[in-house]
Image (cartoon, helix red, strand yellow):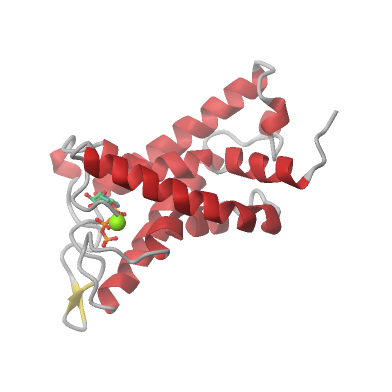
Length: 186
Ligand code: CTP
Ligand code: MG
């Protein structure tokens, strides 16, 4: 039997965006690996006297996020094929295109994060300095929009999920700081 409650819909949307959530953590978790890829996405270029994105947005972080997005989505597909976690499915994982949904969720998370950095630089907020609200939700907005051509997730459960995403991002960030992975606690 399908669960029809609104709370169940929110949980299913959370499960759907798990690849994006973990993709957003990938740049921090990859640490100093692959130093050759640690080049800034903006190539050091400036716009109006400020960096376009800044040194904290690297190819390494973007590619790590895409890889994690693909791996986690494909793991969800595999679980579905094994007959597991069907109650958590907001979409039909059985008929999902190979690789593309995870790619779009990971890329969307990274692009959303980078666009947020673009606006931080315009507002003279230094790389790594906090921009509360935007730092925590940027990746969800990007992932939602990039995966939209494949999957139109219900908007209301997605919006209701945002406070939990916000709180979860703060906890993850503080944990990363405590573990010495991040410069700032927020
Ligand atoms: N990171 C990266 N490449 C990316 C995104 C993130 O290398 N495309 C790494 C950087 O080391 C960054 C860390 O992950 O410092 C945390 O990412 P995030 O919090 O998104 O960036 P900020 O350090 O806050 O930088 P900004 O002010 O530009 O958002
Ligand atoms: Mg940050």
